[in-house]
Each structure stands twice: as structure tokens, then as C-alpha cells.
Image 1 (cartoon, rainbow, N blue to C red):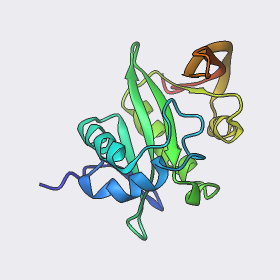
Image 2 (cartoon, rainbow, N blue to C red):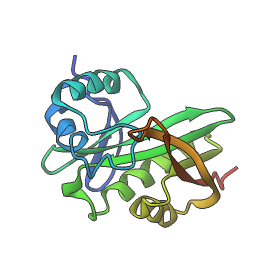
Image 3 (spheres, rainbow, N blue to C red):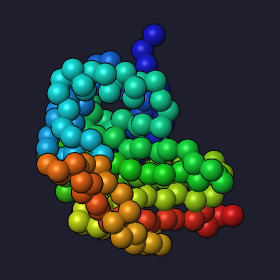
Length: 177
């Protein structure tokens, strides 16, 4: 049975569940140091990507973004379920497809769908240095609710001391409620 459950479609994109055939496309962007620069993980090896793909296939929180015209999987949107009818949104896209509006197009469709399904609030956490990401959130209509200073770390330095980072928190409320 093919695991190609379509979640939503836009003019240019198919938003769907992951499938085994996505391995090469997934590796293409998760192995790119520039793409994962602000993520809580380093660039993945091919074997790590294989393992990661199995997790993506098994969860409904990771949504693959595929180009309709070429059938190439170019990125993903994360829609993590949280308490109080909320979702956390995140996105990672192949660098070769940045600047074409694909992240915006896919996020708009998924946000609209989530709100029509009764979600109350969608939020995102973002590194203040990741200007492309928070500019996208603002363009989508999210409002910055917080700037946490040195609240999180993903890595340690050579002396095993945490490398602290700031976090912006953006959110959007369901206006239909």
C-alpha cells in the first residue's frame, strides 16, 4: 500500500505524508549545513536520514511538501500537537527552493486547514538570527509574543559549556472563534 496520503493541495504544491521514496530528496536538504543551521540537529548522514525518514513516515506531525509539476519533495512543515488546542509550526526547505514562496504557500494552506478544524492557536519558536524564518512568520500574519534571552542551547563548546541562544516566539490565533 502506498503511503501517499494527501493532506492538502495548493496551486503548485502537494502537502502529504512521507513515503520511503522520499529518501534521496530528504537527504538532499537534511545533509545541507546551511539548511539545518538553526535546527536542534546537525547535518545528517545518509544512514541518519534513513532512520529519520522512518520516524517521519510514522508520525502525522511532519508534512512533506512536493512540487506538483516535477513530483520532487522539496521540504517539510511540522505541525506538532500541543495542549489547549494549539499547534507548533516549523518548516525546513531544500535551499535550492528558497525564495520562491513555497514555504509561505504550504504554511498558509496548513494554517487555514488547522483553524477550520478547530485549532485555537498556532505558534512558532525561532532563532532571532534566523531572519528569513521570522520574516516569513510575520508575512503569514503571526505576531511576536516573546523574546526569551539565552533560554535554550543545542550544543556545547569545547569546554562542555552550553552555547546559549535566544528565542523569538510568534503566534497566530484563530479569528473564527
